[in-house]
Length: 417
Ligand SMILES: Cc1cc2nc3c(=O)[nH]c(=O)nc-3n(C[C@H](O)[C@H](O)[C@H](O)COP(=O)(O)OP(=O)(O)OC[C@H]3O[C@@H](n4cnc5c(N)ncnc54)[C@H](O)[C@@H]3O)c2cc1C
Image (cartoon, rainbow, N blue to C red; front, side, top):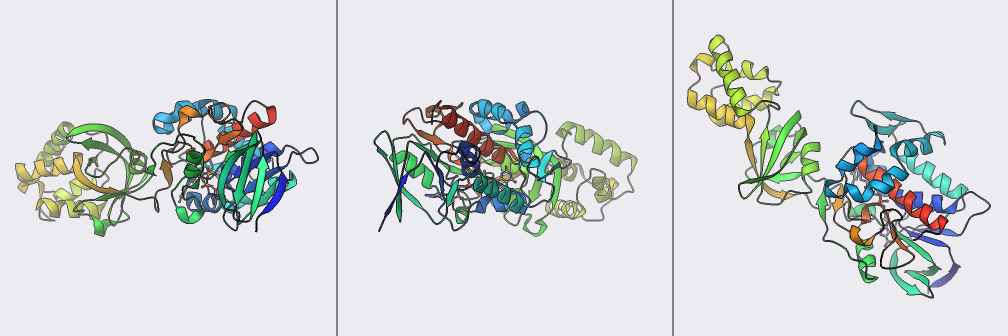
């Protein structure tokens, strides 16, 4: 049996960071609140938020907010107004003014000082409670229909009506946390265009991968070039991690939004050194130190010892070979492996392991200042359900909070949504 729950002012679908923050901003201050309801399909809100930053929650990034625009692939321009309207400093101030201090690590990633994502969630839920937001869990939204100038939202057990509906259902990655792509179906059902979705911030599985036994070894600041049909299409630099099945780490995660099966990743393990420079350096060093072992010369390039051993093994260079005995062919093989090691891409990690979703509600049909649909008055989209995916480093949560703020302000000010 379904229950009619009476009229609401705003229905937010999804109790993740975007949904909760939008709801509490739309609710205003206690005493004068419009009726704002959050419908969350899980038994509790924020399950994905709890796993962010390995449970520590990398909430945002330090520095000037303008530096954020380049961290969302080709879609940073859409986020400009939202990020400028609610910046990383605003986000930090929101939490700090309510008693949760923030700290930045050496790479300017910002975390709660307690290093607990659960503290971020608890604060959002407390603020919702204090502002009178009705958070209703175990409510899976099954359909949204237009009704009398507003919307009728149906869950398995109840029907809600409101002039404003905000879809904050997240993407399709880590479906066990609740974000299993429902928002795309709900949006498309209302006639809102949705672009094809694919996993992003995902590790890459490599064809005939030679480094399974080196899983866990990482490299600082390497260069990675992405080749498709022999042509370089993208490149990036950053830390790289060898996994059991292939490559991960920020540089690969960031490129993953562009990587397809069949592509080739060429990795330079000696960043900043071209093939020619490395060749010159090695020739000079080896000539000057003929009695030193090749592996000790390579250690000078800050390469992990186990990786060097494996590389020598692959090229057929004996472990204890001295520089004087290294043939030109072997030296050239070594240089090629170090400056452009080729990894054939077998697959990019699926939605189960990807941190975010690329694609989603098409940006061309959403107002970037208000997050309101350009097609359906009263409907807004925030957070990861939008066709936005950021780099690692706090950029995705900042986008969730900034878009949530923009939508809430627009609803409160009567500018849209
Ligand atoms: C392992 C991991 C680590 C991450 N770490 C970071 C990090 O450190 N920093 C960072 O910036 N980003 C990080 N991210 C990305 C970040 O978690 C997301 O971008 C962010 O959670 C998106 O917020 P959201 O509110 O849009 O969606 P979500 O957090 O996915 O919330 C959506 C909510 O909607 C609910 N929902 C879905 N469908 C329905 C329905 N039909 N009815 C009712 N409710 C529904 C879901 O249950 C869910 O609670 C990480 C992601 C993963 C997977």
